[in-house]
Image (cartoon, rainbow, N blue to C red; front, top):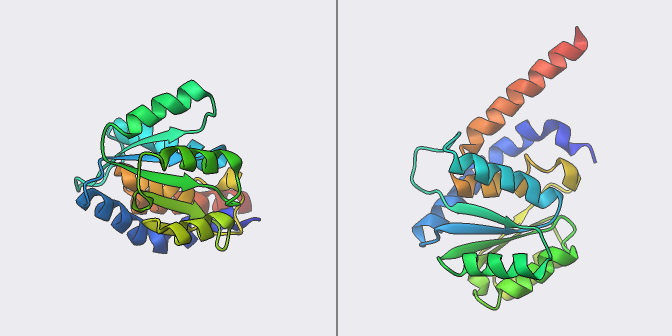
Length: 191
């Protein structure tokens, strides 16, 4: 469960894959992304969406979707989010490490009333029930998360990085800066 310690290095090779998913979504006409998550799978995407809206750390290309997060089960919040999500072409990200988290699966069921399976991406650990559901239903993609990283530490995994890429954040630069900071922390700890 300590895979988070090396995430800047281990996730760097996946940066191009995630940016390509974002660019293809833009090219296919998506203009907003809805992250359907709870807890660890929703906190970093919310932060990255806010950063991108503020114009911080964005890539040079135009492939930037508006990213919002649904992480409330209150009926009014779900209803308002559904109205927002159906107002424009939306890519839905069902985000659950275990693939069994009740809330994201319920959000998926609610949003699936307004969207096709091809409008969904699943982010989950390999082999979870969510991964199986996504493949059976024909989701746009299934993005495997590193199983050795707990949900609370997932900001620099695909749980945070894919929404960041969708929002237009330069995730390669983000990971490079995180690696530099990790190295500085190691040097400081050994002094």
